[in-house]
Image (cartoon, rainbow over all chains, first blue to last red; front, side, top):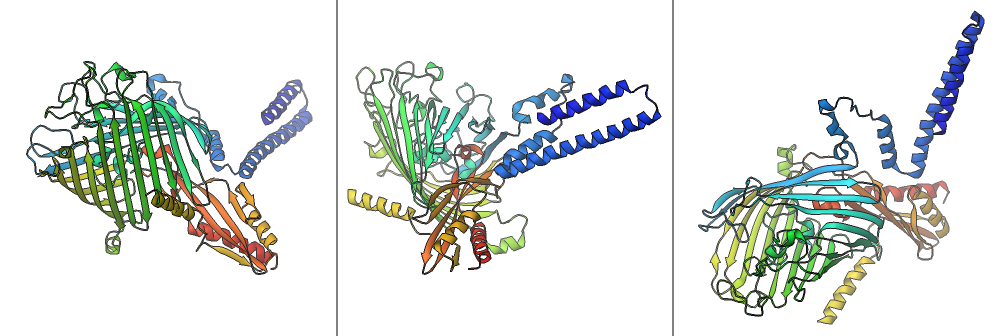
Length: 474
Length: 143
């Protein structure tokens, strides 16, 4: 600002001086020319000095990013908005023009081949007939914005099975905002988050993106018991503390909307077939996504990492799911991650208790189609072992395909879930063997084989299947 | 049952306090005070968060550095990384030794990863470079 004032004053002097000396003789003109040259040189020096000063200031403050931004802003040409008909106005949209906004996404594609005549997998949406299908399951664009150093906006929009224009029942396809949060960063140990929040119940729900997972299908416990993707509107706090030199504690604590356990006609939606999935706010058909009762849910997770590669987490959810807000629903979950060298062991266990779900809202018995009481308790767990490797022969044979960033992973996972724990025949187990290849860490080609054991321990029906898939961030 | 859980928690907590074994160390015949002061100077550029001379521990704040990874299939330069240094200065006979540890965290605006910084392995070359810088400065002091 000061520099501009000096330059302005010098220019004014120059112009003023010129008007007075229009009539001057040749000698005076020469002197005037010299004076102009001197002034031009002075302006140039002042400008250079200003740039140098700003660069040194940046260096001193060690704020590389900020400096880069300032330099980019200085160097950037102003937007030409003079011809709105030319379509250039689109570039004035903040999400395109601002270097602080990132647009991206992820998508996947699966080929599913199962040895059942009418299913393409446990927990998958039925495709009516047949046992083999292509499925473009998820297309998820996301947007991230650094509004200021302290205010961030993050969001993800999920389009599931997006090839359809209508679903089987004629309603619209599933498009929903998976999360959309406004974060206000206060300090490392405590920050504010509000919006549609990915609920911290177990670890898988927080890391559910297809390209992050080593197997195509989500664990049974993370689909039937903890209905991933589980998000609700609400607000709360999150943060990180470092209790010792190498250890770290992450926590999240939110107050949110809560599950909705009943339809408008008062019929229940928490069943052994669907688990809690149909009671989620994002699929509830009651009250247009607003709360069905006055009760709010409290949800939180604490994760402790004593050293890099080791983390244990515990999480809890407590709310009510009925219109009168008198029936509590709780979820407890534990998760673990152990990683050493190429080996990784991960897993999660969860327990659900929905009080009085085996009773109708009028007090009678609530039974399913098989005459079994509706579930009050659910539980499940998974444990997964991964081994990362890359044969040197492949790197030598095709170095452009098998780079330093590429890796193969061999995976084995055991799943168990029971969506009505008071009965054995609602239990399901699954063993999955997988091999995948990541040309880069954000893209994965997977081949999985599932051994599914349905209908409980006394009468197992095998419904094994092959799932080939690809998923990538973009 | 409860004792098993308590002992497991104790083991995990102790792991968090583990010594910086195997990390790059600048060993010098210089006195503890000189090594301590030199370590502070060598960490110039990062703001110190903790200076506990009695315990011999220096800790810096997080400093953002260039990310070693790119994001997504288009390999965009939008990922971030940050580092924090811990230097432990210990008396060794008449001299002292400064051991350097780098803690590193990564962040990406890709999907759920945008919600939080996550711990990643530190860079051993950068740890060694800081230890070498302490050694160089101590040698300049002639001890």
